[in-house]
Image (tube, rainbow, N blue to C red; front, side, top):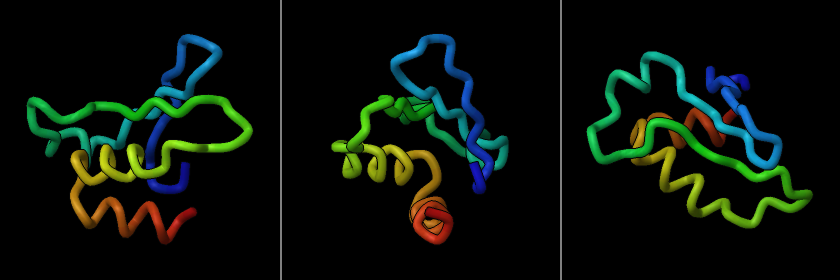
Length: 69
């Protein structure tokens, strides 16, 4: 991905996207360390993905994500 997330999937039904080191080092203990995205034709969980990105990297990561859609 353009903003540094890497696909570390081991199963076929979801993408397991792990953030780059600059985000990973700032993730607090109870926050998600990766994002799971299903292989559906329609992505129906946008709000959940945005919230997980916010938990990982704050507004800076949200803005970076939106700029690189």
